[in-house]
Amino acid sequence: MNTIVITIISLSVIGSLSGVILFLIAQKFKVFEDPRIDDVEGILPGANCGGCGFPGCRGFADACVKAESLDLMFCPVGGNDGMVKVAEALGRVAATKDPTVAVVRCAGSPDHRRRTNRYDSAMTCEIASGLYSGDTACSFGCLGLGDCTVVCTFDAIHMNPVTLLPEVDDAKCTSCGACVKACPKMIIELRKKNKKDRKIYVSCINMDKGASAKKACSVACIGCKACLKACEYDAITIENFLAYIDPVKCKLCRKCVEVCPTDSIQEINFPPRKKADVEVAVTETQANKTIMEGF
Image 1: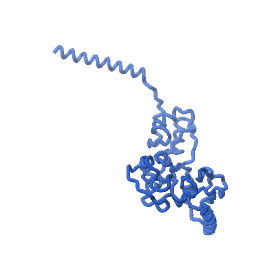
Image 2: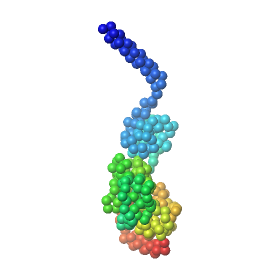
Image 3: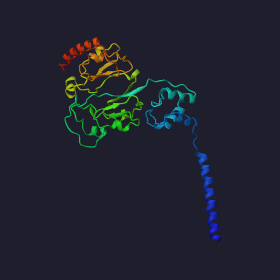
Image 4: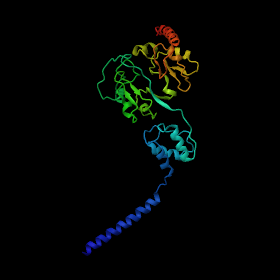
């Protein structure tokens, strides 16, 4: 009986001493965490998408509290309204940013970009891009295996079964950038979101010379410079036989669209053109297509 009592007492003493030691150690090495981190995290949308550049919403909240300024801090999901609330909680001022949206810069559907072979391996773009250049003559275009749709946690991007290309739902897109990072071909870009979701962009990233690009895809940019000459706002540049439209400088005048001989420049969510404008556009396009025949 005495042995049992002594054992119980010994274990109790050891347990109590261990508890005291652990408490002292915890007090000695405890890390103070600013309570404002919890406040900021509560304001954030809780998407944990990483679009801010930090590991989750708590990581972003911690960075905001520690930062001297919020100028370089931005939560794409919460947007400007969310950042204003964060700034108010921290007694600071948040810089506003133009909203952006994901854009797929490839229009190479089967109608325009004929399949030359069949891919029969792991059905992911990441693996396919590491194995070969693609199942068409264009080595720059979309592989169509949907890695971008898998990583989107907002259900904002889906594969079109007809065009075999990803399509972005502007209303759902939060501009988190997950699809941009997932695309091994780098055809997805975050661009400025204009009023009524209107956009104009070159839906091609093929950097081959004009003749090769056109042979691989009928709607490829051939670097003919017709759009460069038509733009009055210095919004277009040509590099490596490929045109690019700066979303900040672009005024959405659509003159570049009118003169593009391959229809590689997309105009989205615009009202129908007036009859007179259409006739002028047709004339200019026909002239440029004559030029294109030289490529």
